Length: 504
Image (tube, rainbow, N blue to C red; front, side, top):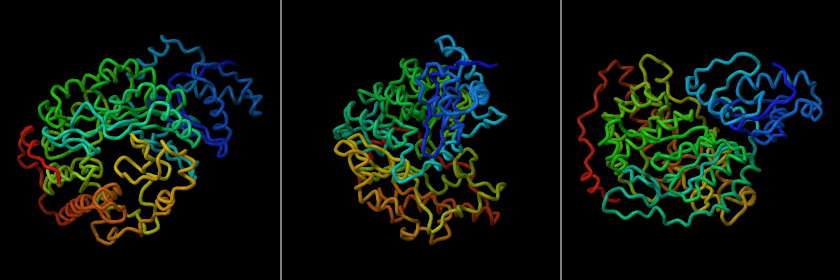
């Protein structure tokens, strides 16, 4: 079909870099993103400069970019085929119809043919980030809006969080940024190349101006990822749907109610969270379930797989339980899996970094780390902003580069000695790292190093423990030794257990 006028759908966003002639564009309802180069990117730049819902003239694009109208028309037809443009004005009825179409599709299984090949989210994002990678370019930022939360999870590593029912929460101790300060910071980040904003906490919906921030990011064409427990989204999903978040990550700890609720320390939290997930799925909002695996849910974490299958969601299992950013070490003492437990779950193909005797590559460890390599992407083009405005590499590494409440982003980039030193960091700077056989199996979370030692260069015990667990499992597989197959007996959640936790 040929048309002289097309319309930009409200479910699209993206970023164009005129200097590099590259662009990334998202179809947020289908959760697919595309990377463009050269003339195609320049055309996408024009599309993204058009307000959502407005018309785009083939002739105007052709005249501005000096590209033949037939080429523009052919390209726009392909964009329409992928939901990035529309032949007709977008009405509420069209949005509802498209949502229903997307609900019927299985995410990540759509096969695209032709000039616009479907890119995986990692491939498209990586391609764009690589193309624009420069010292002062920021593509992804996590906003920790608040450390306050509607749950009181026993493993929470945020400063001020409580680990037992007798402690007093200090989650609201930091003076949080105001709405106007956030808008100013978002403007600065967009000028620096912001593509994706991850909104987190605590729970972001415990921050009073979260909706205004989400709406502002949507207006600025930034793709939104949300990290939440979902409790305060109940009844507000329709409002969120109009902002087309790219992904909503919700924590679920078990399909067994007393275990999940025992971890969150909020009665009926599993029911409320699952209700929110169902509402999100009905609006064709992509959901990812996060499930940290710890001693309290290790026997029932597989029940979360059934929830993921029911709703057709992604699931991310994480066995790396972090200690608190404020120095509380009870999480690793009381909640971290034992080596025997680690041996069992590391044989689970649904666990990231699992070890399989049937897949030889998993037995070889990570050979890509070299002494001259960059050990962490955080703090290069990806950053985190604490509730008080501190700019840090990531949410698990509280090394401040400067404060955005007090300083302009460009001033921090120009004047911060800590940021300059961070960007020049190499693996060869690390003590003990990559000097042992088990180091090949280390995931190298520098945040763990810093949390334990207040230095990124000293190996964190938690990093080493997990690397050794993987290494020992590989040795057993190669020696054809018997492997642990069952999780040891573990008591169900009991709140009295958490009252016994003590700081230090």
